[in-house]
Structure formats: C-alpha cells, structure tokens
Image (cartoon, rainbow, N blue to C red; front, side):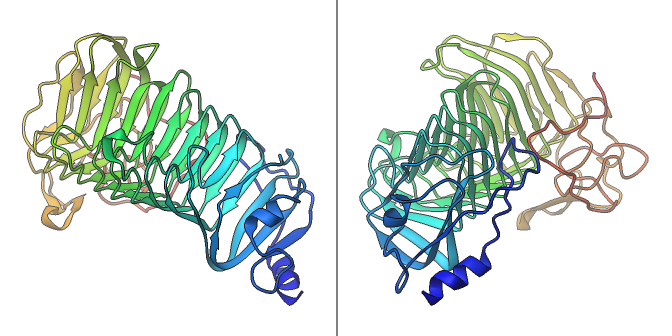
Length: 417
C-alpha cells in the first residue's frame, strides 16, 4: 500500500468551503485509487466513502463515470482529488452527468477531469457547499458543468471546453448556474470553444452570483450571459470571439422561458469585451419583460462587429447607468440609461491589434472618469484611482497591482450616483 501511504502524507484535511468561514475539517481516511491501490476506480472508493474522507485518485484515465451517493457534513466534507497529474474520468455520461453529483452536499472535486460525455459533463441538482477547483470538462454533447438549484458553490481555476457538441439542441450551457442556484462564485476559469453560451446565469431571483477574473472566449455565444436573474456581478473578465452573428460578448436578457420576466441588480464592470460577432454587450428582451437597476461601469469595448453596446429592450425601471466605459467602435445609442463619462474611439490603447487594451500615458481616458459607482480596483487589481482621478475603461494607468480579497461579497464602490 505504498501509494496509499504516499497519498495520505501528501494530503492535508484542512479545507474551507463557501459559507463555512475558516473552520478546520476533522481529518478522515484517505482512500487511494489507482494501479496498486486498494481501489481500482473512483466509483469503488465513492461507494464506501464517509464524511471527512479524501478519495485520492492517481493520475490516469478511469472509465465508467462517477456517481456521488454520500453527503459530507459541515466540518467533514468529502474530497475527491487528483494526485500526481491529471485524473480523467470517462464514460457515457447522460442526463445525470459523467460526474453525477445529484443533490449531495459538502463535496469537493479538485484536480479532476471529465471527458467525452454523451450527456452532461458534471451535473449537480439541489446540493450545497460544493467546490470545483482545477476541474476540467473536456467535451460533452450537452452542458459542461451544470448547477441547478444549488447553493454556496465555488468554481475556480477550471477549464471548460468542447461542450454542447449537439449545438443549439443541447441542454444547458458550458457552465450553467440555473433555476434557483444561489451564492455561486466563478473565478479564474477558462471557458472556451464551446457550442453554446460560455457562462450562463439564469432564472434565479436573489442569485448573489459573482463571475470574475475569467477568460471566456470563442464560444458560440454569448460568452457570458445573464438571463432573467437578479443580484449578479460580472467583473474583471476578458471575453472575446463570440462566434454567432447574433451573439454578444456579454449579454443581459429576459427570455420567454422565464416565469418572472425580470432582470435586476446586475453590475457589469472592469471587463474587456472584444472581437465578438455581434456587440461587446447587448441587452435583449425576447417579447415581454423588465430590466431594472443595471450598472455598466468602467468596461472596455473594442473591435466588436456590431458596436460596443446594443440595447434591444424598451421596458426599464429603477436606476440604470452607463458610465466610465470606452466605446472604441463608435457612438452608442444609450436609450433609457443615465450615460456619462464614456469615451468614444481609441483613447490610446497600448497594443489593440495584440489584444492589449491598457491605457498609455497621455491618453484622454486617464483621470477622465467619474468616482460615482466606480469600482475600487481595475481589471488588474490596481486600486482606483491611481492618479488625480478615475480612469475610463477597464484599466487604471499606474499604481501598484494588488488583488483585493474577493470572496462571496460585493466589492466596494466609491459612491452612489
């Protein structure tokens, strides 16, 4: 049992799950999986796992999928982790997912990959306190990582690609946060080359979802989509290359499938949206619905085929703001939005052809923004303002780059308009 002993020494059972604060989990067993270990497959270990245990999966490929059948507890979550390299789970998959989490809770999935599902890559429905870290979805016919009715979920450092191979007939999206999922954070992920939307938040009031510091590119589009949800922050992302001519880099929408027909309290800030087949950002209502309290602040839109921002909706309520944005493609019809301190045209980007939209010294965007509703940092984490005033666009010129602590909280803003 040399592998099992090595895994036990390598793993530390001190974990922090979303919503748990800094509690230290009580140590459980280490169940080693792989050649020469006690368990030949992840499923064999999952069938006997208990709260607090760690399933340590040696690098390799494991056919047959993985179905979770046991809950962890608040201080004794269950961890499935790859050890020593990629641990790849393959198989047919299906409506429950190649990784079928079901409604089980207090689970961690670290440094694992699911590949080639004929249905969903990974699917959770109703569970809470879940973590997907260093998690890869490599191909699926339907959605990649699908969260339905979940709560307190952390998705970080993931790579999701090749999903939605069935195209527009596929169920869900590359990364779906759907139908009652709340308190979800998606950060430092790459979501790319998928056959439908990249990251989609949909059909949830009081979602308290945060999508930040991700690279979301080359999906059919939109790359990031918020549909009929409230309380969602989209910030510090780079989105590019939405491929379908009707799809924006970032889109806010109310589709007819929604029962509430309402989108509200959505903040979009410090994003770069470039090279998309439609707009950098679009607002769209399919037939009837209301948008309210939408803030679009300190973003950079450049090189999008149909303009920076396209508004295809006519029912707005509350306080809707377009401020401190760069519209490099040209003027924007801002419609019902309060619009100020925006800049049209290239203000002097460092290397737009090379995808570098930092400002250069002497740019008219420097110190030209408003402090009202401005974020306290830029896309790099540089504090705002770094100079005499707030800069326009996603980047602040100068200053020292420091990442603020961004958990499941709303980042501070400088003031109200």
